[in-house]
Length: 402
Image (cartoon, rainbow, N blue to C red):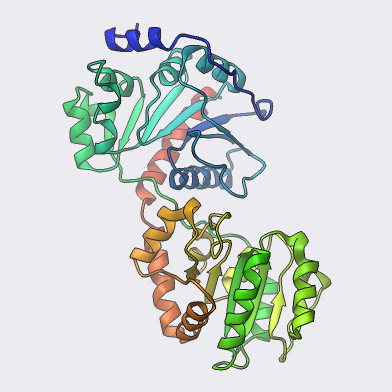
């Protein structure tokens, strides 16, 4: 039975929605985890959590929901389905749950939707509140319904508090202490991309003694700035090699035409070319080999960030593989991740060809790049306790359902 404030809220939102939601696909077969992310940083953490579960042998899929004002996260795997969370009313909540039938729900942080959470509990779906933070439960959204926040939070089976302050806040609200565990924040972590080890060793031997930097996920409108920066840095290190990766590998021919027109000495990876002593640019125009390039490059410029409209790309990929990180000012999709890395000295912002070439020249000193790479590893290891504990809980719940 819903308590008084919750019952009043559910009565108010029982109306039919203005526009019924549509679903992007049918429910995938097998076990399905539903994870709700309140921001893109939490979305990245949930995506990596499920990636780790699958790496350990769990054949699970993820339904990832976000608020309406958040865009779809980048480069979703085939086992991930994304959609915006529907309007918070009873009818939509029931339609949503009837379609997806999740085996488990993970809700990050605040912005609670009482009708959806109550409907999930009524459906008998286990729910875990992750990253419960002190300021997420101030009750301002529901001032007109006393005690509603406590009643909604109490519907969760497990609550993972980000720190002691959040735990005290929840217990003061009236939640039983046994339900609240202090685990730290669930944060994006560095997941090492795979690579062909033999190819990595062969290229490392071929390029021994040469300075190398990587421009990853490059947009066509960024190419001029990157080439200008490379041209400037070659004045200080004439054997330097740029590995150039388009964000869309099908644009490889366009990038190649530009390099030919400018007179660069380059090799094209999709043609089977290997860099030679005089090669200035390696055009890496294939997909699925970023693990190779991040391992080889001590410096990575994460593109899709110099011009607006692309939002940046995931910095944890190079951070996991020992590469110092440079990035442009337009990283709205991953702002939290870049802020964490920059605050720890693991990433630096650049704004144009001059600042990019200056950063490359400075970081070409091995000790400078190594300091940044180590800082990135330390930041990426934060949140490990929360992730490990959550993975254990998830596996226990899914095993019991099976």
